[in-house]
Amino acid sequence: MSVDHTPEETIPSDRTVRLLDTTLRDGEQAPGVSLSPDEKVDVARSLERAGVSVVEAGSACTGAGERRAISRVTDLDLDARVTSFCRGLERDVDLALECDVDGVHVVVPASDRHVESKVGTSLEDNLATTAELVEYATDHDLWVEVIGEDGSRADLDYLEALGERALEAGADRFCFADTVGHAGPERTATAVARLAELGPVSAHTHDDLGLGVANALAAVSAGADLVHCTVDGLGERAGNVALEEVAIALEHVYGVETVDLEQLYDLAQVVSRATGVQLPPNKAVVGENAFTHESGIHTDGTLKDDKMYEPYPPETVGRERRLALGKHTGRAGVEAALEEHGVEATDDEVAEIATRVTELGDRGRRVTDADLLAIAEDVTGDDRERVVELCDLNATSGGAVPTASVRLDVDGEERVASGTGSGPVDAAVSAVREALGSQADAELESYHVDAVTGGTDAVVTVEVTMVRNDRSVTVARSEADITRASVEAMVDALDRLLASESQPLAPADD
Image 1: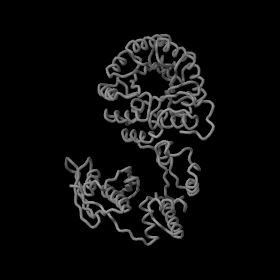
Image 2: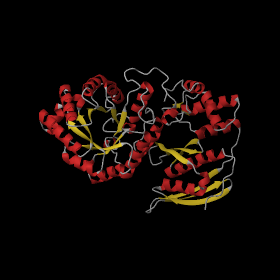
Image 3: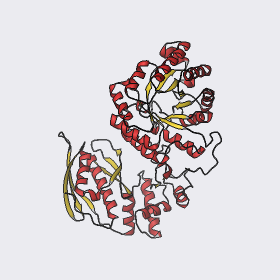
Image 4: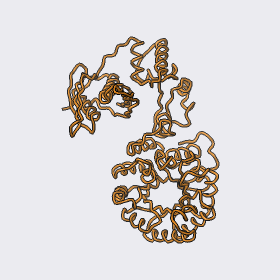
């Protein structure tokens, strides 16, 4: 990625900085997150595609199941170094060795609070124990990083002594850990600068004060050449510093390359699906709104010059620009959206469509592609013939396996199919796909239950985005039944996608 501005001098562009991902260990410690071995493998493979240098696969001391998961990751034979987290115990190192890892992160207390209150030892004994652990791990041919836990609240003289003792004992590097997200960038820079005089130093920062990225950059500026991160900023409390944010900040601002930026969005999606943690829409780099424009001024400016309201092209991080429709949408945005869907309209018709889009947005609704096209059809008088229409739906979930059957009208032909799934919605979606066949295949890119009203007559709103042949359509449907709302939204989205294709649909596959 080229930097079109003068890089900051605090981090020269020729610096070598690598990223250590701890999503599979520290990220998994976020409340409610538990990754299966298969999910750990999927995430590890995605990290490898992105070019992450070190993958902390877990904490071998957690249990036999965790060790099996770590072993699954080491069996992948990644180019990345695969490691395990260890407490200050030889037994933890032995358990890590059982998993055939390349290295270990030995965490030892650094602050008085952790040395004396948590571990219950003396400062001098802590130094001696650390040296013994390092020697034990290196004697077993392991790459060793010593993490000074709570280093940001440690006495700097003692932290320096701890780092010196670890490196003298043979550790490959010492890590400055802002364990509770306590420090500011000045404190971080001061501590890391002193440690960097001793040897290779890493930085492990948390985001409790919203300073995770600032502290990571301060550490790099002061001499750290390895930054601990998690994908999507997962982790305990407010989370760890986000890998995608550190990577783009280093490359965009300073010209320092760390990973393949084009893989960042796919990586974020893989982790979000595996953990069940949804990405906030305003999340930097990977959030839904990061490259979405609704404001008329911003949309118009972006259409004229794509750099007008974006710091870097969305393609840099594997994204696409999106023009959203709502109360702030101007005429330029509506015209661009109509053009994207192949809808022709006069200047007066575009103005009327834009007015109606604004009115719909004023009611507090998000304006979907289907809303826009319905408005356009009404304004232009162009009645559209449906390609796919839902005629009937039956779904049951009382038995052992949820089942569903659908009856569709496809280009005047009635098609009936059934399906099973993990729930009634999944079963109904399977039935629709069975009825339409592979030639009408489309990817369900997103599925959101946006609103549920209260009371016995509750209404649920389901919004889906479907993609086919590089075109996407978003449709929302509201019904008392979530299964019907889901299927109607999906069928309408497919109808919109298929209507743009000139070839008729082939019969359903046998």
